[in-house]
Length: 184
Image 1: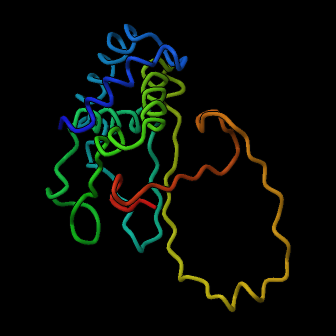
Image 2: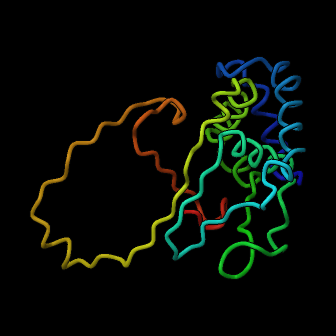
């Protein structure tokens, strides 16, 4: 449970320099709100944590508040034990270890701190918005298929900023197998 706490403490010393918030704000009301969110994991996720099983196409809808509750519980290592059953095809929840992220990627640690600050200071109407998470499973396309495609690729627009500010677009996240148990 303490894995990643030293890098987190070092990152907290720089939250103000990064424009996230003051150290006092993060260690005071934000940390208190995170603990409050984590405490309510059983209430907000009364039917258990949803799992998108590898090899199956499925979709899960969660409010931003439910996402924040799960992330806060992960920060405090308060998620159910992956070996506790109920989850993927093997009957297990995937491992979700923020300590690995905190130990290995400083920039992602700052993104996580920014996320926590944002959800802990957000209005209820923002937290009540519903987001979807989907997993698509298709048979891999062969080289021959791609060689037969004669249409050009379409233009793409890339915009910088937090994913939460995006509207009307497709938002995709690929996660490492080590961090989220193969959520990619």
